[in-house]
Image 1 (cartoon, rainbow, N blue to C red):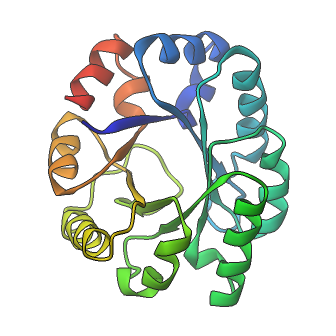
Image 2: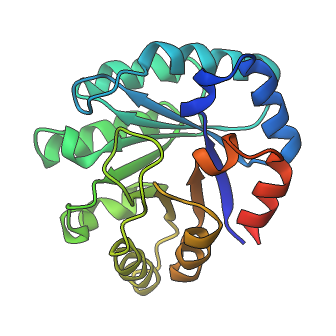
Length: 220
């Protein structure tokens, strides 16, 4: 059974975001997925709303925050989100100038007692990040291009998940595999079979009439 990290990207459209956060906890989500975008690394800018929502969640819930940074100035955003004591902070491999910066940022997150994650876009090959896998808690595979909600799942992602799972097992690594983009009950099933541990789900849950029913369906 995979865990569910509910993306709160579309909660901005709701009349009462605080009630949505409360209802998601009652419905059984495992994490709140915080999609932080700066309008530079990706087109959309969600940074102000995501920080505000993160603080609201910390006041009403003990569920962990799963922070996904889609930003250019990675260090500044890490510093900002350390204040909300997230469970994960995931950075993008492609946002870093070189591999030394990747290593430095991952080390910095870990030193601040937060589990670090590394994310790759659909066109980035897994081999490029193998060397970082022993040092991260989570590898986030994007199954859509980052920056927009509601996109369709890229089928080739399944091969990437299977390949990553095989590598982790062969090298005795306990890194979580998280998949983000286009996840619904149909794509969740194939992603779980491929080896996914955590499913990031936004539209399918937030637009559902019954959050609990949808989360239960995704977890099975």
